Length: 241
Image 1: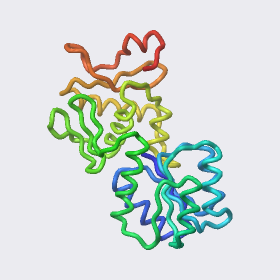
Image 2: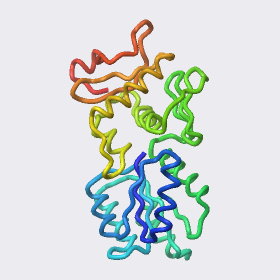
Image 3: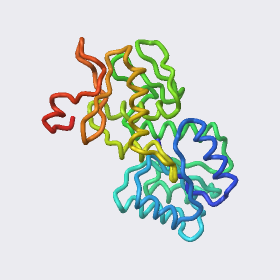
């Protein structure tokens, strides 16, 4: 999951970034509203954490422009203004949640988890696909009720594939959701992450299929079929599922 933080307080922005990275998110930060608007116009994020008191372009204007472009990503507003009017304006412009400063990092992390679950269409913190279960809150994956030993990057990759199970996910989409700005991640590196995760799913009937020229698809394996890299019949015919 890739989060953008728009916050002009460097101490707060750094603390938020460190906390969310430790929780397994890819995080980038900007310090003013114009930077935030440019970043949001150029790239898709999974969540925006937005301070209303940004210099150069107010946070509410950043939010207005975001929604005017039709972007549906969840937005969590942070502000020192705790008045009812400020909350109402932000929510009316399309914010999904609101926190007044100061706040507890643990509560912010819980709200981030709730917003990203909602964006994925999951009402609970568990993503399931057959015997494979990913606990988004606990950052733990199990196969047939046995824990999987996954790195933070592998957990992020699994979350993306699970929320799009049965559909093709391109390498470019994986880079956008998994990687921060300036992080040098090649297509070969993505292939390595996929290979490692695929090996760890071999114990179940879940496979990651490589769709040549398109990307990857998480699906249930047919009994007796290897957890390999060959495209399914539908994918071979050019159909994305």
